[in-house]
Length: 324
Image (cartoon, rainbow, N blue to C red; front, side, top):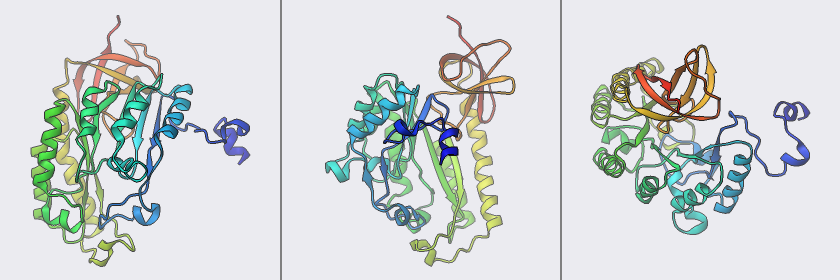
């Protein structure tokens, strides 16, 4: 424990009494707004490990946010196993928009980012708050898991491809420039090449801004564990790579559309000859980055800067700082 405290530069007499110690770069932090999940997805062991959904009260989260802001945090990344359920257990109604409003009042917080929203029964008031609140990033992480109705039913997602397509269209109508990040699972029991074909077809239709792929894991005590894990690990990996290769061309096309535009970028680090940062459309470690050459620019890590995008590749943008 003493070594851990020393590594984290923690004063145990003060900081261990309910306060956060940041292990990310000091300008952004993850804020867990609830724990557990009430959903019954057949592949997921989270409810078994974490239990039922339990929300943290708004006033407690605001206190956490204020403490983080005092430490220099400018971006809050809200996470939960099921973000859209926030408040149902303690307030008897969904309260994520109200939470966003209160967090936005915290001095020093400039960006608030939403991760892990479930598509079934999605509350559109979240998108309305995003549309009208300048501090909430136009970014939504909404894991969809599959495009085949057969697979969605087997996964017990409670969604269909058609319903989710309609949801995404409605979201984009309200916020045309929103970045939608999603994840898919490949190799679920019974998945066929036809199902993978449906997934690629839907990815092409939806043009997701950000996309990740996981391979199915056969978890004990989940309902899917009763099924035969009939896709080999080698085939799972091959399917995952196939989907990511397919997404690569879409990502390049979307990135090329940003060339010539000026974007607000928060800078995370220096790497090689570049300052490396992110737009509001990108979460740390999983999404695209903006690279600015150190030779011609000076930017402080943890600061925002307006960057004119000069070129793009599959998963990154390149640009120069606009000096006022």
